[in-house]
Image (tube, rainbow, N blue to C red; front, top):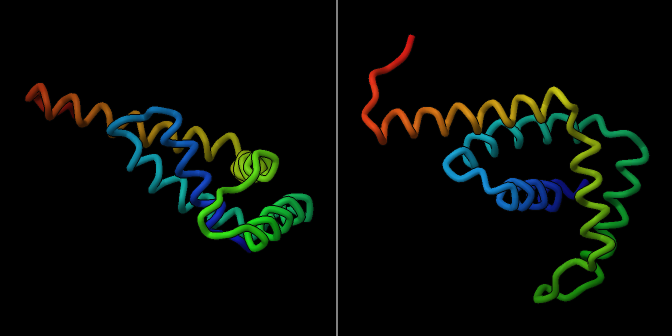
Length: 111
């Protein structure tokens, strides 16, 4: 299973999402969930990931994945994570932003 590829794509999705200071918190929660989900992926997702892995093995290190392989990888990430996983990822990012703002503005801590 090409976990490194999937995690790399997930990281790219988070970066493209422009989460700012919430990115690391989203990454921590999402990485854990994604790795857990990849242990129990459906045959369809496994087949998609095998296609991407085959392409990665066929290209030189200096080249990047073709757009269709990148799209397959992205779909696999979206399919592997549940809506609840995405909610938890978003909540982690939001909490990190909230803490950053409170610290930056030196606001009193809430209960």
